[in-house]
Length: 556
Image 1: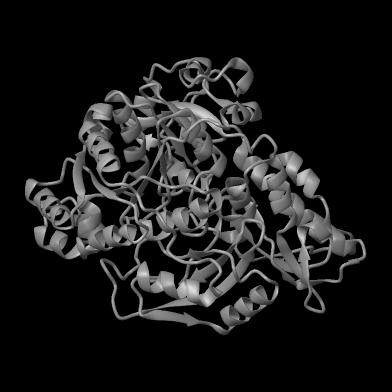
Image 2: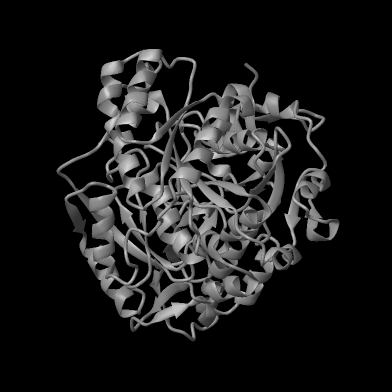
């Protein structure tokens, strides 16, 4: 079979104006970025403001293998298949980060015959949103250090600067650094660190902001440091929030592209779900709901991360009501959760599958706790056997959820018709009774306790002294009544990546808690999770090249 990039290069793309016309978008309502990409203008929001909303479908997954399980591929394919059966459907996805693109996981444009295009652009610089976010983030950092250099009128404690620099790349050498070395004119020496752009609070703010005014207001609320006498310092105290907003004004506009089968897709924002809230922008999702009868979106990694945050953070703030959850699983991931080494996942192993399928059961149960009906989509691989697939179908039947074998990767829309029909049937026959899992007004510890017990299936939560101190400070600042965003491993329901399947009789450890006041949530850090990933021994960057004519090769 052809590689993803070879398939994408063969695509017969429509000019972006033709894609926009399918949605009733006029030339004055989009801003072209070349022939096949565009930003959607603010005037389109005003025009569609009073239009009815379509149905919202969330695509999530079980706990994955390190290679991922094709959640974006299923999302793209489902949109293709729904259009194929006569439904007006469109995508609302996240933008890829350059970290995974050059690292191990790959991009976020789908795969096989279910991709969004132009995939090279989408997976690399796209329309520059990531760079704008990085620049705005680092402008604030520069202003903080400049303030201290120029007399430190606010008496900022250089040991308690919370806001970190960022870079959209995997670079472990930047996790802990010392800046301001050399002569006095180079600034005040202090410890600092970088995080990957998709974990930054600026990214979260852009994805949760309702408009430009809300974006600026949220930036002003960012807690950046404490003074020497323990008082909070916010971005508005430092200044420059207007300049940051100016850098982000175009990045706030959703990006319009298309699928291989020329169906429209919005791609906007890209926070990771293991170290951030893992959802595309509220603006893109809400606009898609106005433009189509069905909007398919996704949330990062397993449902214990992305989906929970989608429900408890994004839907809560944006007033969204999802109609259906599509839960993606693969035979290989279930065998992985059953203890099979990565090198043996292609071999039939029904016994391991029977053991690992408890992970699928738990994710189904978890999604039902939010009152949303579930359809299980098996992203089929050629190594899957009939005996293994029969086990999954039986378990889904026992749990009362629809089950569909999706061959979207190999067949495009034709491979997902059964899935599309079952999703439509579920929406029609099982009305959603969506509700967030917890009351955000509860104390921080109570909210974390609910997540630990109900989603991660832990007995309780252990807090380090640092976490206890941080929770006390955040509560005293008046931010104890906002949602929580847990940063943890994606490979397990627990905070330990080696505990596969359904871990039991354990406690989750919160080592630190930080306030993202601008984004509107509190981040709890568990286990060994890091906000700046590193590169693997053989990075994907080694396989990527560009010829003298500018053609890119080796990008998946």
